[in-house]
Amino acid sequence: MISLIVHAVLGVLTAVWIVRSNPQIFAKPATGPLFSGLEILYLLTGLLVIPICWYFNYQFVLEYKTGADNPIWGPGSWQQFIVLGYDNPAAASASVDYTVMSLILVPVFTIIDGMRRGIRRPWLFFGFILFATSATAFAWYFAVAERQQRHQRTQVGNLSHL
Image (cartoon, rainbow, N blue to C red; front, side, top):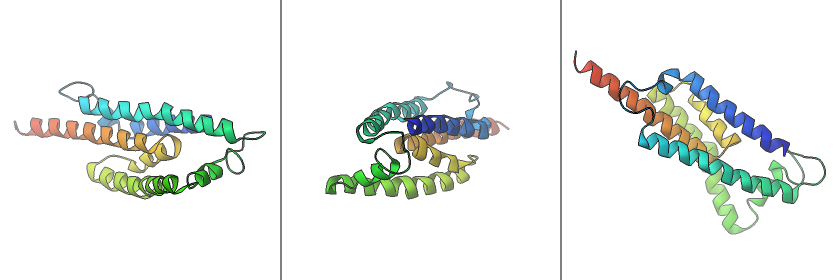
């Protein structure tokens, strides 16, 4: 259970670090609502998936752990979690897809696209993959990119009157 709590704390700290690294993006937009409908959709999706995955991770730890918590090796550990992801062909197919998406595509995309958009420390979104869920990483990044775009549209609108 300790590893689940540590992951939750690290996930929250990642979110705080992203927000503090990008105060201009998280400032209230000059026009429009505080959050757009699209931002709300992304953020809610990213948040709602966490308790679902947390539930299954909690069930895994309860079912497989023996004795003291062991987050690295042995029953109920990350190593066993990954091995069980390849337990049968269907699970293995999903695990390969998830692994490639989570460890290669999402980090490369968020870092490159984030740098192009002027998002500071875009590599932090990888933290959500490690500490929350891949869906949370995508959702949070999409919400931040949408918010950044809203700010940029406002700036362009203000410059067009000059």
